[in-house]
Every structure is written in structure tokens, then in C-alpha cells.
Image (cartoon, rainbow, N blue to C red):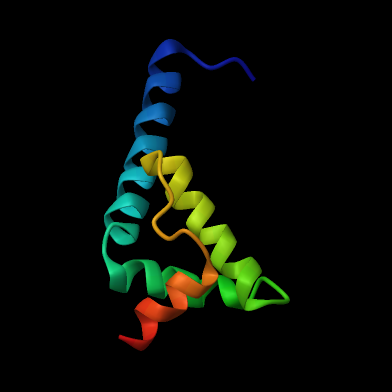
Length: 78
């Protein structure tokens, strides 16, 4: 199926809106924490779930939110 320029533009806008919602959530400590717990059901280890969320943060913001899993765990305890 061939899409028109208008359809492509709308698809791009929709993609950006979804990314914006994810960025809003990940930008807060609580949102990052909630995303981590949502990912736990999809991974065999806590570290892999953390890496998924931290790498998503890197992809969207250009930096990692936490240097490693231990730093993240320290944030949870505080």
C-alpha cells in the first residue's frame, strides 16, 4: 500500500507523540521506576529489565539516566 505525504506526516506525528509520552514518564524518578517494574515481566533478570529501560532513556535523551544497576538500586533505597 502506497501512503501519501499527508499519511506519512501523520504517522510521523503519531510516533513523536508516543515518544513524547515515554519521555515525560522516564524524565521522573518515579516514572523510570514504574517503567522498570513494567519491564520486569518481560525479562529473566532484574538487570536486563533495568538495561532495557536505561537504554531506552539513552535512545531518547542521549545520555543514560544511571551508570549501572547498582546505582539504580541505590536510588530505590533512598
